[in-house]
Length: 420
Ligand SMILES: Cc1cc2nc3c(=O)[nH]c(=O)nc-3n(C[C@H](O)[C@H](O)[C@H](O)COP(=O)(O)OP(=O)(O)OC[C@H]3O[C@@H](n4cnc5c(N)ncnc54)[C@H](O)[C@@H]3O)c2cc1C
Image 1 (tube, protein in one colour):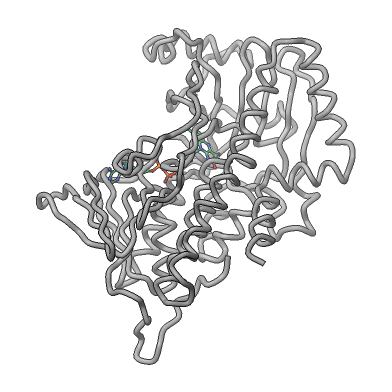
Image 2 (image 1 turned 90 degrees about the horizontal axis):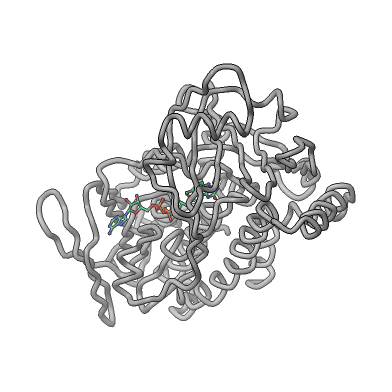
């Protein structure tokens, strides 16, 4: 997306249309990356994060090629690779028979990207390393324990009401970004509808150090199709690099948290998936509501939505955070150009007009299709879906086309074509 380096004028100043900073509500991975991208372009930025630390619950890990290229621009990619695991392929299995349906190898993208693989790097690692980089910029601040409560817009500025450890504060900025997650206070304050639906079941994530790789061809990202209980299995490095596996199951719709987390039920679920003689060590158990929703608009006046505040989806395909990082870079690039007077303010219209349909086309459509395929109950439809996957995997051109879409490279190329 270019423009990652600060552009200082003589004397170290950046010529800006205003001296006000960009304000960011939410210092999760998307808010922190938007802040770093702005700071690197010389734009003053303030991040307000409600929590007192970065949440390390197991959420995103899969980082796709298109995103790795953006993290390279931000100087983050080497650390992401070092603290993560390189996963060159993903495999789709039939759970009941244990047979492989198809394997997809990102190596076929070697002429398309410097990174013909995904990196499994836990999102809290990316979040923390981004904040560390941000702290090097004198014109950037990142405040924990600071919850944005309300937002007020004026012709020339936006003001946030923030609850801080020192009491309530009212802070002015040139623009604001709501990167405050799926339950976004900013989105609600702007009265923007979150259109779509919530899946009736929840997703249960069980994390274990038990090593599954030998059974599944050394593949670190596995999906198991099953009409009764699909499953997904991913490896992450863990804090010490020793490796942890996250096993994802859908809950029954009526299943309570207590029932899903019950030790006997957890062991039974894992044993049904992969029977072994002794019990599983389980280091985390987490339950997530899962939605397919897109904000009716990604912008109102001087305020923008990015990441989960703008769109949420099921995690099958590992696309939500990736797309949110792309939002962050696009928005930082557009805002920096306008604030430097390199582009007129209506340049900012591109963000909503382009990224909203792009999310529907690449993230909502793919994740909905991935889930449907794994859980399909009609045997004939299942068989057709599996045959289609086998045919794609067996044909080099179709294999590459499938992965260009799955890795979001195609969506980035579409954007490049749109801006000329
Ligand atoms: C099980 C699971 C697996 C996933 N796997 C993947 C994957 O492999 N790849 C992928 O791309 N995506 C994945 N995702 C999705 C990914 O986790 C999210 O898309 C990502 O967290 C979005 O980042 P964010 O910064 O937009 O929002 P969040 O991570 O939700 O961060 C929002 C931040 O805003 C803060 N906040 C909230 N309200 C306020 C307020 N009023 N004021 C100030 N701060 C506030 C919160 O404390 C939080 O720190 C997965 C999700 C789940 C649940």
